Structure formats: C-alpha cells, structure tokens
Image: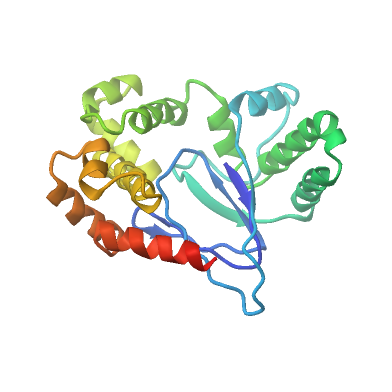
Length: 253
C-alpha cells in the first residue's frame, strides 16, 4: 500500500519503531503490518483526510515489462524495511491530484483511473522505493515468499503457529525465516500473530460484537486472563475499558 497524507501528521508504531510523516511525504508498506497510528489534531480544526492505493504486483510487473531498460530510483540495494517514508515529489503529487479529480467525473474513471494508477506506480519506481516495488512484483524474491507466509498467518491467525511450515513456504530454514521475518516486519512470527489476534479482538469489542471472553476465544486464546493481560500491555487499558473508551470517542464524533 502507498498513501499520501493530510496536514496532520500521524505517528504509527511498527513493532518497536515509530515513524513520523506529514503532507510533504508519503509512506509505502510492502507487506501487511499490524501497525497502530495516532493523529495530532490541526490547530485550525481541519479534518484528517488521506488517500491510499493498494499495490498490485501484476500491475507493477506489467509496467516493468513495458520498461525493459528502466532503472529503479536511487534507493540502493534491496532493503528489508517493509514500511518506509519518502518525500512527495511534484510529479507524484500531480498524478495523485488527477486520480482524485476523477471522483468529480465518475464517467471518466473506467478510462482514466488505470492510466493514473500506472503513472503513480511509475513515479514510485523512480523514487527511493523503486527496488522495494521490484521485489513486490517479482514472484520468487525472498520478500515475495515471505509475504506468502505473512498472508498465511493473517488468514489463520486463530490457529496454532507452525514456524517450520511457514519457513518451508518461504523456502528458508526456520532460523533464517525468523531472522528475515523480524527484519522485515519488526516482529517475530509469534509477536506478529499476537498483534493480529489483539487487533481483531479490539475491533470485535469496540463494535460490541463480542464479550471479552468470547473475543479471546474467537481469536485463538485459551485463557481470557492471558488475553486481558496481553491486551492491556498492547493498548494501555484492559479490554472492557478500552472498548468503552473507543465507543465514547465515536459517540463524540
């Protein structure tokens, strides 16, 4: 995913890392991460608005196929960062603006949106994330294989974690898989699964779809006590109090 931002900088922790970004930048996420963001209200009360684009590997691959001599931007060798921030360029901003302008001309979306999407991706390829995009679009890179394992964890997050099977999926030894997984996501596989479980449970609790015990069991915990302890460590409040706080905030808006 790539996203452009409004004039109120969020600060999303990714693992133990905190990244700052603002309207002069954009961020790109090469794998699905259980990140949590915070928004600082603007002094003049402007609402928080942002726009994002899901990165489709087949479109990036097609674009690279049409540009056989294309050189990626000055991003250096392949990096393990899965979440990165870069400066917004005038050319990239122009492509975003034209894409957004289609909301005022729905009849043009079918004809023009694909071209604008390719242009956005082309501008990204020219930037510091060029090599990252190449890795996303190439099926047999280590990043692509690791992403397959990540999708498996996300799909089966309530099931016991089987690191050996995930490592085989990524064509790595278990120890190499765990090292590469943490370098890319900032989490160990077990920590990643735990975050996914807790975020799913938080959504259920905040929307009133489940009690604390029911949410704990549904996301894969055998002990509601352990769930409550890990939930409070992750979000700063016990499950019921955190859900009540979120619901109260929503009522205010």
